[in-house]
Image (tube, rainbow, N blue to C red):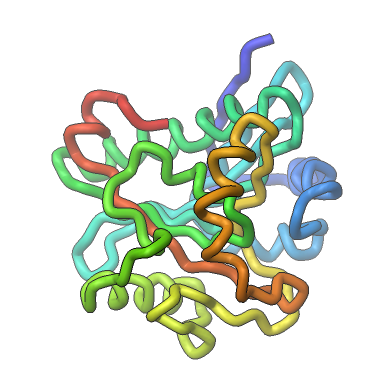
Length: 224
């Protein structure tokens, strides 16, 4: 059965839909509940829902905005069910984000930022350029500045180590990319896992990460 994608304003999410999102998250990494997701409706602008028939398979809460004049897609929260179609569901979520980015920012490179709690979360950056952080790479001053800008956007700049892109947790829930797939495990749990070795995930540590969606790739539909 084909996946169906719907995007609406977060403010238009009804209570029944928020309950549906929470049901999807029950077995996820962060365990977002109805109370937390209800508050997230106020933090983000667009909600993308991916269904297979009547079953919700994935969703994202995102905002398209300019940060210091630079076009950006900020992924507040992305959650994917752990099924055989997890990879396809993630591509559907990101494909919709890139479609919206092309409409909002034609002919411009777009920064894509997110918080990651596991190596497989890097899958959201597939096809992007100049991803930060990455193993064995020392970010430039400008790249560290982008990490700080994103941490500020997430309301947590004071807890950031910008040299390592690590955002220290405070024990509370936070929006991240919750994605795991058997297909992606070998690729993303190997080399990239070193970036997460010093994180205390029980406390809520995560990485602030970003990559660049190039204008030509967006226009050609090569992303997502």
